[in-house]
Image 1 (spheres, rainbow, N blue to C red):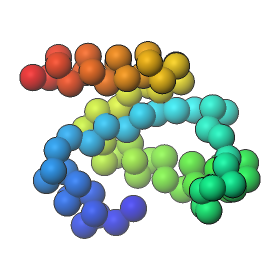
Image 2 (cartoon, rainbow, N blue to C red; image 1 turned 30 degrees about the horizontal axis):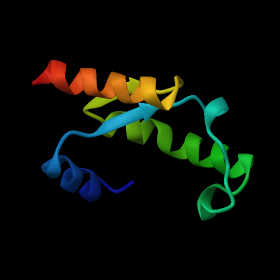
Image 3 (cartoon, rainbow, N blue to C red; image 1 turned 90 degrees about the vertical axis):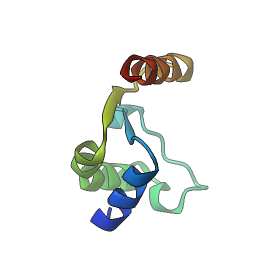
Image 4 (tube, helix red, strand yellow; image 1 turned 120 degrees about the horizontal axis):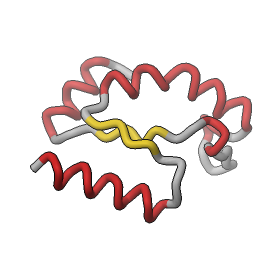
Length: 80
């Protein structure tokens, strides 16, 4: 969330934002900031634009984990 943190992350490599729709995000009791659907929605609305702006790559991630991973790999190999 802090600009300094984003700059430090970018020093270590490329930032990939896995862009998953709000409807496909799940609340869980083991994540203190997202224990309920309302918490997830609040975080999504607060952070979405920031994460998109910081990303070097934005990958749609509403598919299966395997398909999402394949898309990430293709993006990285295409860039090299």
